[in-house]
Image (cartoon, rainbow, N blue to C red; front, side, top):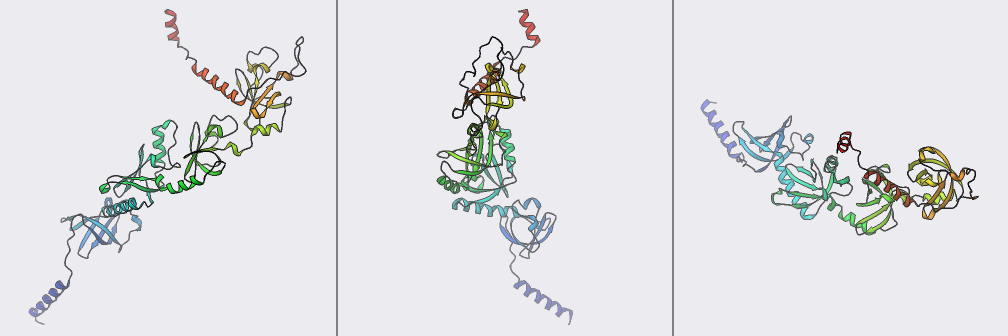
Length: 416
């Protein structure tokens, strides 16, 4: 075929192909389009757009809501056109911003419907957790956390609150969108709202006397917080154990599972007890001993008004100063020491009043010339509450003692 005719055939073929080819669609800036992943290089993605253009998604435009490892060649993805790079001959695209638009649509829909969604916090502050969804900033205020995640911190120490919140960055939260402004510039999530129905239902069926299993969610000086069925109650320090509790942290750890008894309901304020699920040690002790029995137990501590014996069930029996010896007692430690096992006579025992009085001198022979009754005169022993009050008074007195002056201060006072 002559060269001229061949050229005409090729031109005709080209014309037919050109006319049958789809029109070139030039994407506009900020337009969301669909493309096909052509190649993945490191953390950059090459995208085929309508078989007419090649686009590039750089790593920072992938976003955090996409599992990069799940992307593969041939997969269709929605991307936003940022601009046309003439120098590179590429469209510069963003997967993150396209997802952001879709995420905002979903969040608006969830806010309207009240649906529960799952989010994960990416940053913590002293008053909230930050949720970043492809650049959309959402917040979970501390006040909107459920009891199990709420920071129960002694004295509301801001540093400890922050430490607690930072420990929540690796968990997923079930939340509701409770506020979203135009454009999604500020989105508020609530974990409490997500559990509201569950909490209301649980509260409606709860009654005094119920025994439930829960998780220790906080430990403060005045008691233990326990969460169960979306609810939270307080085991006051006086309801942790039958003995005198000064350090609640010795009885439980955060996250520990415990059984508790519901002993009070006041609206959403729930009072719980651990000790009421245990035998009353005073009742147990009453089955073992009676007045005038001789018992043996270690000395747990010594006070200025007497010594305490560590009895079964955490009961503290008091040997009053006057019951240490027949003679004058200047220092109890001259007669007994902490940790020493001693025998003492029960001179007063009233389990219902939590009173037990003990005596060492009742087991000692009285000095010659001292008239003693065949039995010690029964004294009304101090109650457990009396002993606790006395201890607290003693501690306060110690705290009120002024710090000794330095040598410099002493010399200055003398010179005056």
